[in-house]
Image 1 (cartoon, rainbow, N blue to C red):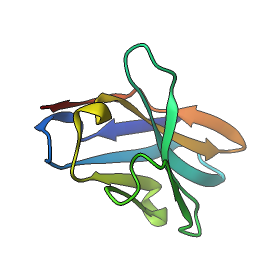
Image 2: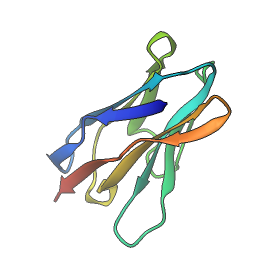
Image 3: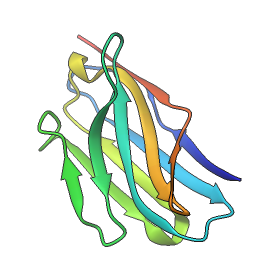
Length: 115
């Protein structure tokens, strides 16, 4: 079994920062890109940021310059540093990873930004 375990969500005021973490564990034979998606109430899930094993990164336009994705390949972990948070960043954030040629999702962590 493969698991993605997220941590780091919470409530923060606009302009504040949060750091999300996601660790993959279990029977992992190969692991590719890891990233973060988010889903706000009444909206579709959207890509926030993704990181390849080679440390190539890609960001949604709405978070460029404010969010930074990083990772530790040895620990099968990915992080999302979120700065200058805005109320519109409020959503459930999901970790996503390509593991053993399959796609896995974390359980989600709530991020709430108050104005």
